[in-house]
Each structure stands twice: as C-alpha cells, then as structure tokens.
Image (cartoon, rainbow, N blue to C red; front, side, top):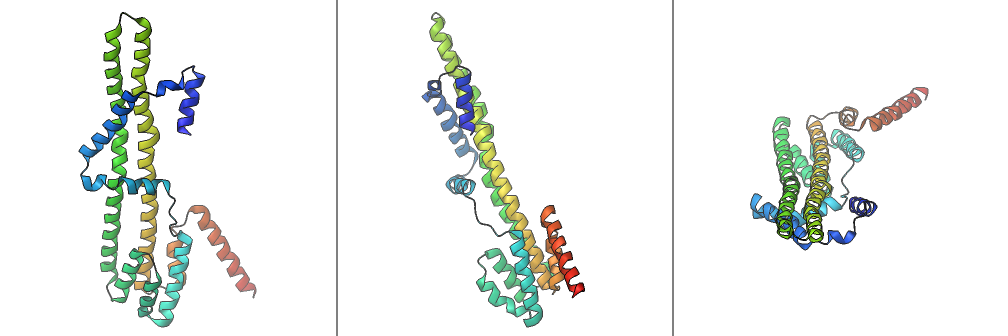
Length: 258
C-alpha cells in the first residue's frame, strides 16, 4: 500500500516512475543503512534479523487469554481434588516452556515469593531480548532518512558540475532528491513500522506471560477455581470482560431459578 501510494502520487504529479530507477541512490540508502546497522550492533544481534523478519510477517498462534483462564480454572479444580502433585502430569502435556517451568516450581514446593521472583526474571529477560530486536529497526529508521539527505547532497554536487547545460542540470537535481525519497520512505514506511510491530507483539506476549504467572501463583496459594477465574478475568479487554460478567450473571440467575 505504501509503495502504491508513492507510485500513484508520482504519476498524478506527472513524474515518470523510471525516475525511481537510480542505482546510486539505492546504494547510498540501503547499503549505507546496512553498514550503519553492522557498526551499531554486535554480529550476534545482527544475525537475528532473518528471524525478526519471520516474526514480523508471520502471525504466530499464541494462546488467547480466555483459553489460559479456562486452563488455570481446570487446574485449580484438579489441584483441589487431587493435590498439588497432580500438576506434574499436566506439566508434561503443556507445550509452553514458561508454563512448564512454573508448574515444576509449584510441585517442588517453592514459596509464592520465590516463584514470583523466578518467573518475573524470565519475563524481564524475554522483554530485553525483544527490545534488542526492535531497536535494530528503530535505528535503521533513524539512519535511513539522514542517509537520504547525504544522497541528495552527493547528487547536488554532481549536478553543480553541469551548470552550463540547464537540461542536464534539471535532471541531475531531480535525481539527487530520489535518494531523499528512498531514505524517508524506507525509514517511515518500513523500518519504524517494523520496530513498532515487534514492540506490539512483545507487549502481547508479555501480558500473556504475566497472566500465566498470576495463574501459577494462584495454584500455589491453592485459590478456589472461582477466585482464580476472577483474578485472571481482570486481564481481559473491557468488552470481553463485560461479556464474561454478563454470561456469569445469566448463569447465576438460572441457578437461582432452578
């Protein structure tokens, strides 16, 4: 959509799309941005860029909040009937390493404070990893527009060498600003939005991890299924929360009538 907007706008302004074919501008902007990233970050971080692109363009099937609430409500019911050690079997059935770790801490008899500290450190470490990935694209979005100005300056230097031929001078000046176009376009339509998408995905994953942590702590404290459900329901979006409460009120009314 962004590329279509630029191309359509250029045509509407009477600019030929062939003007975009400017190898010098492409070299300065994209290779220059890549060089800046290689300088700014260690190779161990730069190697993660292909993985980050996969995360950006692929919608991962994360557990939704309602399914997590249902899982922990069932777990609370099981632990009240069969005891804490029943979580060992459930831990083997769960695919999420964070949940498995939490269940093992519970079955090992660790205190709620210790479990909270361990799981909080895991979440913080995950956030830091995510921030490093997003910062690559944030920095690229900062470098690209500046390199666009640099490309324009280089183009203008070349244009000033042809002052005697006004037609050539005009073409050279227009070509000089193509670098600025590429720099601003890549910075604000590609790199910064990529960074923002990674941050949003990180926020969603962190929220889910905190919900899991609260559920694990509730199991440690042996809260009843209803109390646990009320705690975790507070994490639902407003509309979902209201619907959940409405359904609960209907169920209560039916029970009273019965």
